[in-house]
Image 1 (cartoon, rainbow, N blue to C red):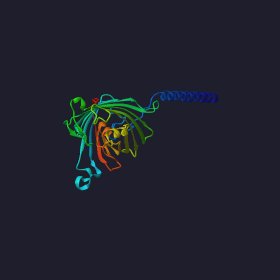
Image 2: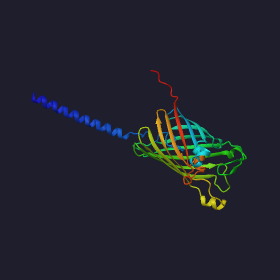
Image 3: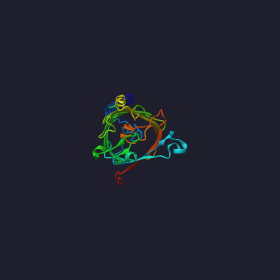
Image 4: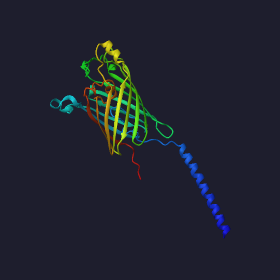
Length: 306
């Protein structure tokens, strides 16, 4: 009996050792597999601009963007900007989980925009950041000879002059469940410059981030710094450069299939051509516009029959 008990003890020890070795091997194999970071941001847009996020394959986002007038426009004349409105309606469709295409129409300069967005890299235990490429084309459909908000009279002599192009690389990292940060190097090209003293192509660097307050609410911010030779323009044109860097601060509220973004900004533009290249407002002068974005997601995935 003693020998039998000893034999059983030895077999149990061998079995436990074998199980430990097997678990250790499985853990090593799991460590080799990438574990991807999810939900760096709440939506495919940060505030005015894009985030690194795409949407699931065969899903559609319907965007409604609304911007009111300036808060400093007065109570009697403009009810603190509520009497004015600028709107953009847009749709974006995910061809794959990493690739989406979209289109929209803004009341600002009656502009139509189309774009594509591709997630090149995903943050994981192997890769420290998510990288997404973004490109867009915008078409101004105003009648020639209209006056811009800067006071410039724009005249087009062919339709090609109405086009603008933009390219961005969006680089983001989710540092924790609460904090995500993003940088956005940008190139914007206008086929027709607003002035002979302005370059057709300009560069900008964007910075943005989000801090999660709870499961449904987060605060976000976005800033674009224009790498424009303003001193050179002012010296040549004999007047102050008309545009400012865009700064926006807001809240993201997630409610089921909706994402509601409420924010304030010195820009009324809702596409990159406008808020990066044509921001008239200045925070210092109180030119602050409030607005919101609403994103509603729809699925076109075929239902699996049980």
